[in-house]
Amino acid sequence: MTPPPPLGRHRNKDGLTFDPALDDTELATVRDALARGRWADARQLLARTGDDWDRRGHRLVVLAEAPTSATWARDWLLAEPDSPDAATLLACAGVLRCLAGKETPETAHALCLAAARLAPRDPTPWLAVLILARRTGTADERVRAFDQVRARHRDHHHAHHLMAACLAERQEGDRDDPLHEVYDFAAWAAEQAPADSPLAVLPVVAHAERYRALARAGLEPGDPARSAHWTTRRARQVMKAAFDWWLEWDIDEDTADGTDTTTAATAHPRRKVDLNYLAHAKLHEGRLAEAAALLTRIGPHVTRVPWTYPDRDPAAAFRAARRTALGAT
Image 1 (cartoon, rainbow, N blue to C red):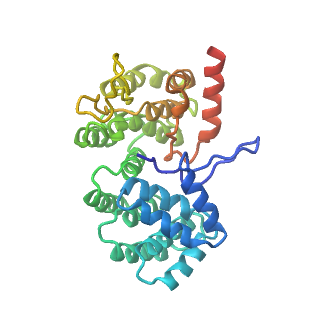
Image 2 (spheres, rainbow, N blue to C red):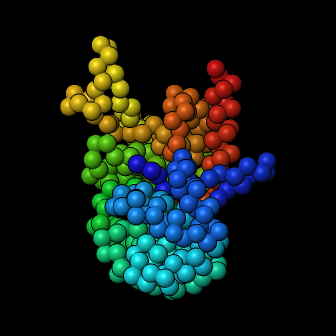
């Protein structure tokens, strides 16, 4: 399952960029082609993606990030007025243009509704509405958009992570509430998800998102290591959430006698948590030592990245954790 991309690219002082396409090399190639006006490549990619809704949402948002995507999506839509792929790409591009201050929320929202009419089964136009509502809408509008996504794909992980971020940002009073609604939402979503769903780690993400919101409100220090509250009671809550859902995601490819079990009924089932998600949750808590240990354990399969933390540079955090891991070996 491909994770959703971060909303925008991040650049740090050494000039390295973080690629939202992640390990989807086919997507990266098509994105470059789209930037040159070759929208037929995007049409073929999305046709091959089919109704893999998580991957489709990821690919459309990444394709929409290019500055010229809206232009080429309009050209595509002129050539194929009934194309749901063209309409949804234009909707995603319109939302990202709105977040960049280049489009009005009303225009972006209208593009999303037009795409939804052409593709009534596709959750992606409603994912775009949710991305838009997070920045420009009301709490009710976010909930309605999330419900529309979930009605079409109940385990849509990008939508769930966005809702966790939205809920975590609600703040009443001048202190944290251990019964905050984001924790209930995350626990409910994890319980509802299938056993092999990445949503199982949402309770951990909820704690990380909540700390981010508290730090932004000035109720916790920007560095979690300086927070006595976080490193004591809250740390225990986070670790409990982690271990409640902690099961490795790997499937053993071979048994002791060399029999291949990956295609047989005896294969080990995919389990609840992808350790990549937990590692990146640690990164965004600022707990680099623990993240480094996880990244080392995962090895070359680190493909999951955070996407709901616009104030942090995941590329820099990733490199820092890797340096820590290499120094410990």
